[in-house]
Amino acid sequence: MKTFRYLENVSTLLLDQEGCIGCGMCTAVCPHQVFTMENKKSSIQDLDACIECGACASNCPVAVITVTPGVGCASYIIQTWIKGRDAVIECC
Image 1: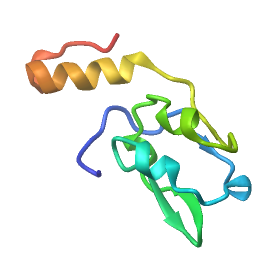
Image 2: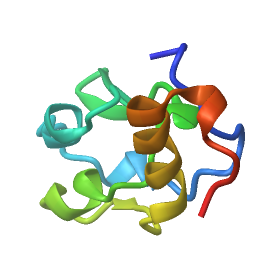
Image 3: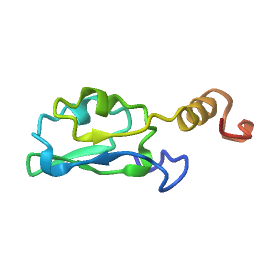
Image 4: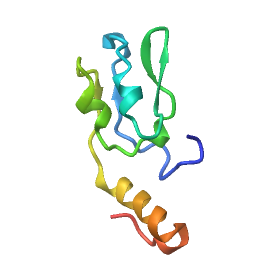
């Protein structure tokens, strides 16, 4: 999802790929295709597309994904969808 961006290099998303069991749950629940499966393990494909919603970490059965849910990025994105990019002045 290369066209979807808020701020680059700020996501708190971390994946312990060694501990991944390859269930694919993160790829199924991520709304912005941040993850991909490589060699039967999850991999972060597009870190800057992460909106820190926490769905991946909440659904990981082996707790190898961590993220600090951030409402600021999500709030900004939702506002741009509703009001348009030019109407949004600041991120909460």
